[in-house]
Image (cartoon, rainbow, N blue to C red; front, side, top):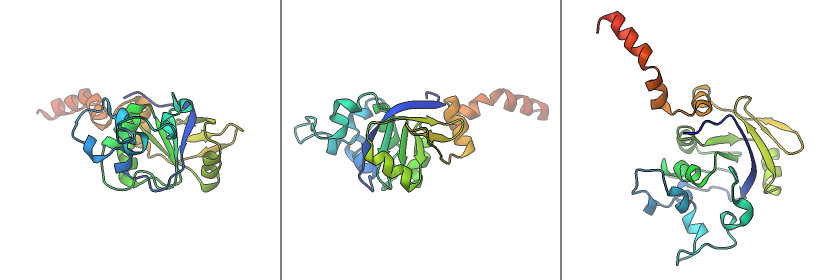
Length: 192
């Protein structure tokens, strides 16, 4: 997992509310246990027609979306069923942060564990971002601030352990494994 400290990126805006995990990654793509290639299936039912051809009017199929690492979504992204594949698909596509006023709890937890930073902002900031697609923002995980092009900085909440893991590019298992020498020394002291 790549560490996240500061992201500077243009935004992709998907203003729809209640974007559920089946819309993010349809169930037919859940047969894999690998993250690779899921970005191609991201928003598949919105992104491609019945023949599998890209729909030109869908935001991810437009040239200005290429290379963007920040997705601004409508209210309540990630609702619906619990599926780790949803943040996997977003990260595999290239997103590193998703911004909304409301992010479903399980999706938020899965995102934090898989290298996707969920950023919850106030309504005014959200409305401004929705009305200004493609603007460059800075997401600073060290200071937990989102900075808009006009210099306005908005704080967002992130649990401290998840913040540590994201900033250091480790998941929970990687964190535990990094403590192996200390665990071994403790067990030696106990005579185990």
